[in-house]
Image (cartoon, rainbow, N blue to C red; front, top):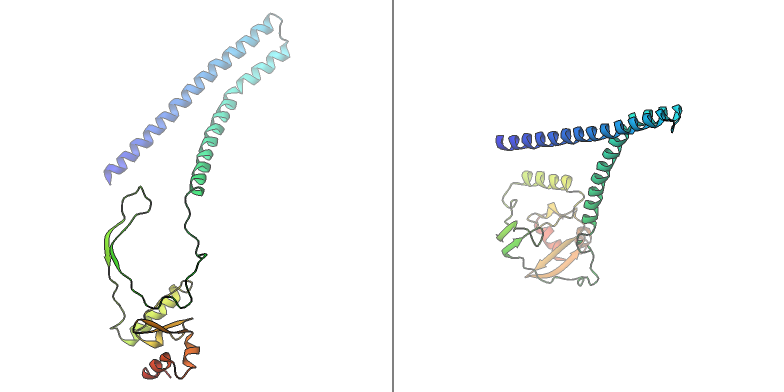
Length: 220
């Protein structure tokens, strides 16, 4: 950390020295140019080529050249900095965009009839020319709420509903009472989709699998 701080201090010192040096050189050049300009005007006024009022105008204008040149240089630097910002924005605009959320060929309404998710030797990088962020990842997600008591599970579910109220939540239910207020419920049996509807509609059907599960759990 100390080395990084030292390097930052050295770079700032170099920048300030460069700025002061360029300012000194600029003032020296402008002073020489203004002096030549004013002396020439006074000489032409002395030999009668310029009138006294013209000489006074030249002298007063020459004394302000330093400020004018300074403003021109500052505006040029600001223009270059702003142009770099526009260049960055243009670069981001031309980046390859992600695919649309909706596809032109959506899957069938009853898809999938069975599911299998497996990550084996999964690798991920942000861009094709960048190093891997994830290397050969093998992922297995185990339930963290299967063995907790009802009160703890209720607290977890309330936290999820509060913190992720604007997100889409996919839940593998261990207790039916945690999904009774969900929008949709998917009931599977032997790897096949048997029912898919809102909990209220499924409970209204006395012959549905969801109703039988709710009856066993003493919810209805």
